[in-house]
Amino acid sequence: MKVVLKYIVKDVFIGVLPNGIVNLHNNFDVQVFPNPYKGKTNITYALNARTNVKIEFFNSLGELVKLIADEEQNEGSYKYQFSAKENGYSQGVYYLKLTIDNDVITKRLVEVR
Image 1 (cartoon, rainbow, N blue to C red):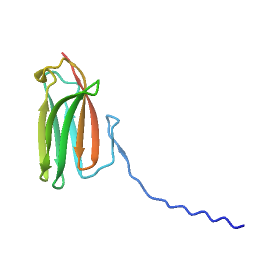
Image 2: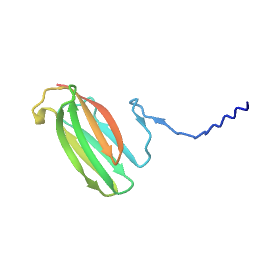
Image 3: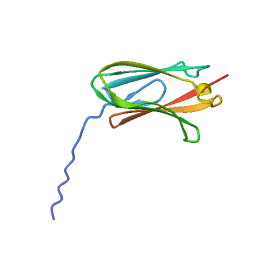
Image 4: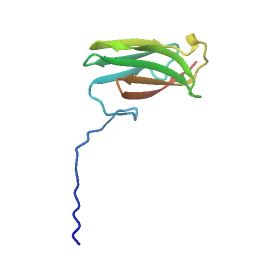
């Protein structure tokens, strides 16, 4: 009996960002600042091509707090602001879910007094 093993090896490049979020995508860059924040925080990103974008904020219970965008966007830079207080919520931990085509990035935000 002859056993033949075949292996397929692929190179995968993973960049670990300073906040510990793994970014496997090169077609966009996302920044959240300041974080923690008081009042408002800024969400900026740049797209290298026309693509579908959805920006959602959730509380720590997983409830949708705010839908900021759900549309096709052109190549370029974008900036949005978020404030839990302005949406009727208290300070605490919130999560940004940014979906670009089928890629999802989640960032943890903290609103302080």
